[in-house]
Amino acid sequence: MDSMKRVVLDEVDRMFNMGFHKDVESTIAHMYEGESRRTSDGKPQILLFSSTMPPWVTSVARRYLSDETHHISFIEEQQNKTALDMTHLAPPCPFQERAATLADVIRTYCTRERSRCIVLYERKKVADELAAHSAMSAECHVFRTLWT
Image 1 (tube, rainbow, N blue to C red):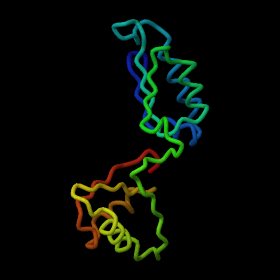
Image 2 (image 1 turned 90 degrees about the vertical axis):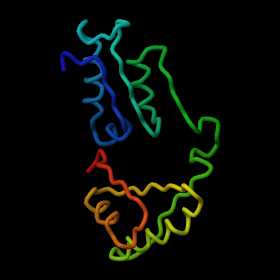
Image 3 (image 1 turned 180 degrees about the vertical axis):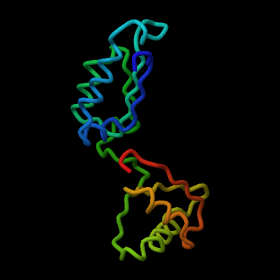
Image 4 (image 1 turned 60 degrees about the vertical axis):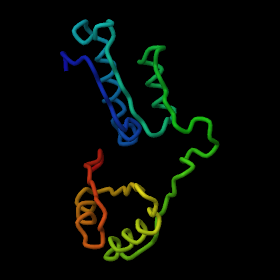
């Protein structure tokens, strides 16, 4: 870790929720120790990505990041914090029918040309099984998540 010049943390809100707040804070604090970790402008480069901004994420950002910090929000001015053109669905179905149900939901709601949908699953194994199911005729990409 002594030669690191940059730290990029994605899903930092999830890391905090999972109890890694001390690890996150010590990693960031470590970046400010010693000259070898500085970039050309003399400062360490730290990027924190979070889909939510709970108070502890904001607190860490204020404590360690410079005044040049950029907070980018795609929904800042909206009262409703969900994208306006997004639909969240959680249809109940028996476990053995989930792939067929999911395929039906995608066919029903993703009818526009170049429509996209994101399906989140806790376990990569289950996501792999769903993507390979014969009912799923669309192109599927399965990514490993932080918590699998």
